Amino acid sequence: MIEGVSLSNIRNRYEIKVIDKMKQILPQYPDFDGCSLCIEDVYSLSLSRMPAVYTHRGSVILHRTLTEKDIEEVVHYAIMKVMMQPKHG
Ligand SMILES: [Zn+2]
Image (cartoon, rainbow, N blue to C red; front, top):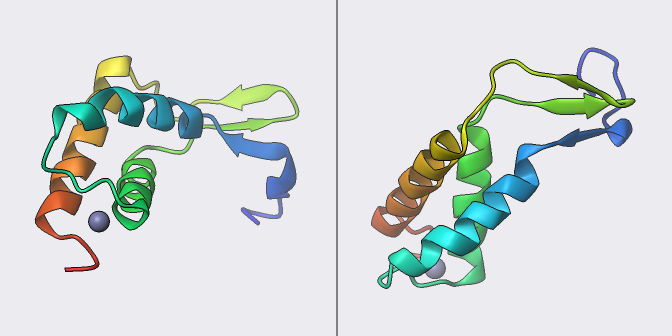
């Protein structure tokens, strides 16, 4: 719940974009171990670095529009961060 608004009708529009970018960018990092824990970390870290953009009843609330390049930079950052500090050691 965010300020009383049900999240059931709200979807973070960047989720799909992050997944697309991860598919493009991860092959550029051959040292990335590719385990599900690290992939989930990259995904959640990437999303946490983005301003929330929510769709609610068909309307889009844009706090800031991110470009494709912005999203790529966030994904690169997240991959490097997870590679340096994998949760499973
Ligand atoms: Zn891993």
